[in-house]
Length: 283
Image 1 (cartoon, rainbow, N blue to C red):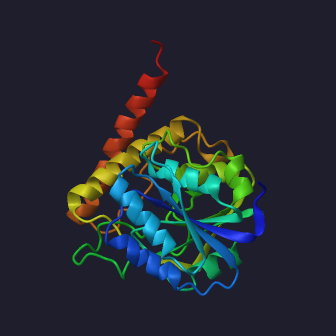
Image 2 (cartoon, one colour):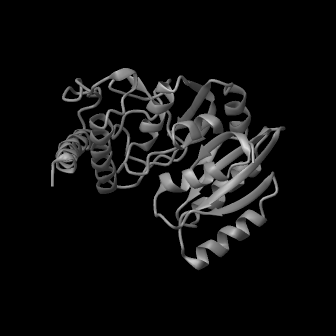
Image 3 (cartoon, rainbow, N blue to C red):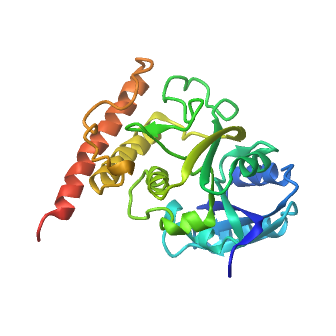
């Protein structure tokens, strides 16, 4: 069926049902948006108890129509977002995650900012859900603008809006990537002629992973994903990634976690390059 131009679809991938999900659902219940919208919960687990609980949460959601779609056949957040995006009935798809918290006017702000020919990334607030003592571990997720990689801005899948027609035209999120799928879809959208924009008033409070080990693992995988994107020609405007060997991030604070984070990304890049070369080699 053709997408409904009067409807907005908020899509959330759900890999597990924990104590954080109801908190995000409560923030979505409090949205001030006066237009027509739906909530699509993409269930990325085959655990029967979790599925039943998610169905109950959808049934108890009253701010708009809420429904669950099954994406459990492939365990992947990208796959869950793609399944949710394909199931979306609205012409505009807005993505968020289940472990963050949206401001009451988040849907209103990001919808108002997204016009045909654009895709929009909102602001990721990092103070409300911050873990004490973790200052200086990472650069800002949205440093007063869209984040960028090798000079190319990109949307973050935890807070972004894209027209369904554009989403489908670029094939959605690349499920073959280890990480960096939001970079990849952003670069594909840019090459498709979509203008990527930042909307500071569309705020979601972002929850980083706890602990040094989990952060380093996350950024190691991001480094591998970056190599995949570049070596597969995924940068926009014909960029061949010649800047890849250069340090693409500011040093910031010389804290040990910050240095280790950058080292994890670098290690992931090296491994990712080796993996891509091995994948391409004749067998």
